[in-house]
Image 1 (cartoon, one colour):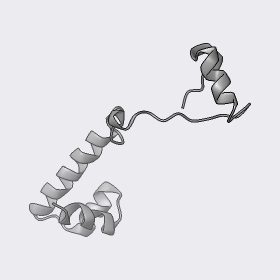
Image 2 (cartoon, rainbow, N blue to C red; image 1 turned 120 degrees about the vertical axis):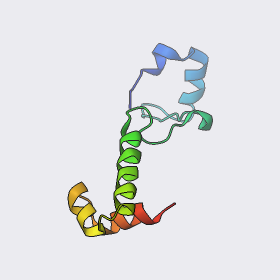
Image 3 (cartoon, helix red, strand yellow; image 1 turned 30 degrees about the horizontal axis):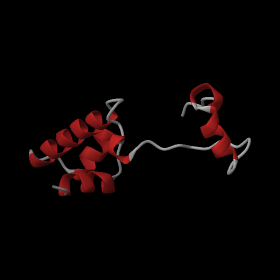
Image 4 (cartoon, helix red, strand yellow; image 1 turned 45 degrees about the horizontal axis):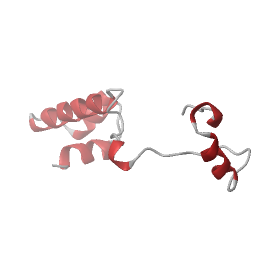
Length: 87
């Protein structure tokens, strides 16, 4: 999270109005809801996990056991079950 001094970006009147409620504190101003992105979208992490899960499902359908997949992908048996049994 990046911090910016309010005096550098906000009009003086708005700062005076905010100071009626908060002085010398750090406040968080969230993004509008329509601009949220899913986790990992920007970094590519989501795509990597989706690709891994697809490969696990394919290997399971081709005959690999859940225990074998857990060892190969360094995941718990329960996690592998969640991956292979979800649609």
